[in-house]
Length: 368
Image (cartoon, rainbow, N blue to C red; front, side, top):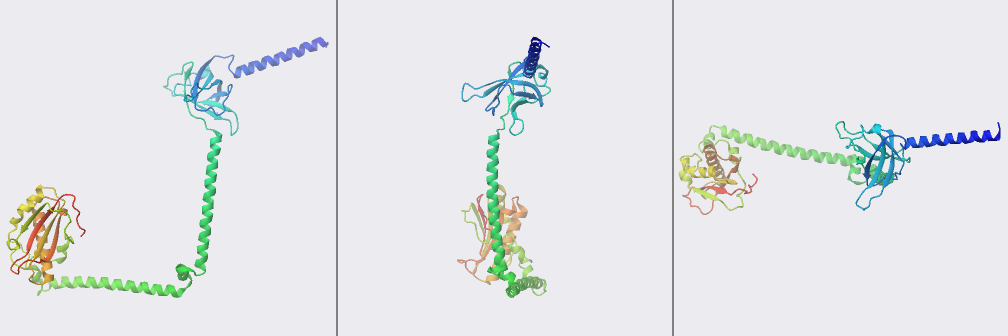
């Protein structure tokens, strides 16, 4: 082959390679196919350049035409993309563009999600939504912070382990109270004996209280003493203090009803009611008005046995309360009793007093 023929063959081969390259590059950049253009706006493009791939559903479907900086600091960067016409029915106005990276340190590309089936088609030159890219530098900073926190946590764990080892060593050596209990059986035996003694004392005390209550109930049922309680209008003394408070509230009374026990009970030393209709005014007031708490306060004169008079006033207060609760509509939790026993300033001929003291809403009730 002559020199001219070889030169001609070389030129033809070079042109063939050049044209092929142009068609390959042009095909990748969609220079020779029908395309349409869309844009998306980002606060940062994370190193995205013109000519980068645009992928729809992971398939190469276009390229980045240009990356334009904003004219104002408050605006965003605009990324223009040329997309193949075949993706026009997939990309909708509700599609989202994101900037992603191939691997950890690969090139950036734009990924566009499919739109909804009923979404409107994006127009040529239209704008689609975007999400901020994940920047590797920010990710590395977060990883460093997490590693620093982990190292600090490991230091704390190591310190706590050292403290536990120190405590365990002291216990093994018999130091401190716990160490003495663990290592010295004599101290443990003495402590166990002391605890057993306390348990026995408490058990005996509880048994004594139980025996006392049983004896009192037995005395009530005894034919010689049974009448003493029944004739005075009550049989079970434990019920007398069920609604009793230790002292009167500190608030200013809203209303006070005062009665002479002679008009309410049959004898000076009993709680048997005779004329409870006198209490209707107080009962109607409790039913018709809002109040915080009401207290039935009963006292006796200075004559008589102190203990018996205390029980008598508790019984009378309980009888008055039962009548009011049974005959008038109000919250019975709001009605308390207070048997005060003997009251100074009364004559021997006096039977004492019966008062129904009504306090306004919001009054604090003393704990029973």
